[in-house]
Length: 218
View: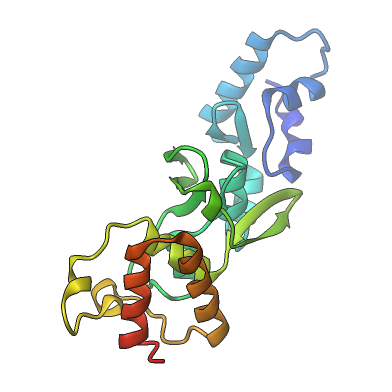
């Protein structure tokens, strides 16, 4: 099997069957031959299937899996209309610290979970008017979006059920959910409050009031 074809692909974050076809010595190679080659390379551990039709070389994975932007970029490869947020971003900002979370993303498309040998990538649906609050970065030519800490916190609280304790006197949401947000700057808090104002959600209004009474005392 022509494993030398994989060499040019080790510098790319992903490739398709068409990429292999362009590198194949025989221009008239049949798709069935290409699929057989891909299957055998996967069996040998030389390539990783990200999802149907998308692959990554084992070499690229081994060289870059520890890069901070590796997983966010993969999430964008799997579903371009998304941004990294929720638990994944909150953990990177030390807001959530207890366990390791999957790569969690937000999308205006349908909720879904994609699992592959690289891990679990979850995508939660949000209203299109709330699909903002992120910045764009590039990783090996892949554009990916990542929420700010304030937007990740908003998404996390907005997309989970309202805590029953919110109506109880003396209840602290940060203690109940073990959120480390004491160090949020005034700018972060203002940004978070802006998202709540734009959401027109009574639940989120109650959450902001609780945070201001118990931890962001103003």
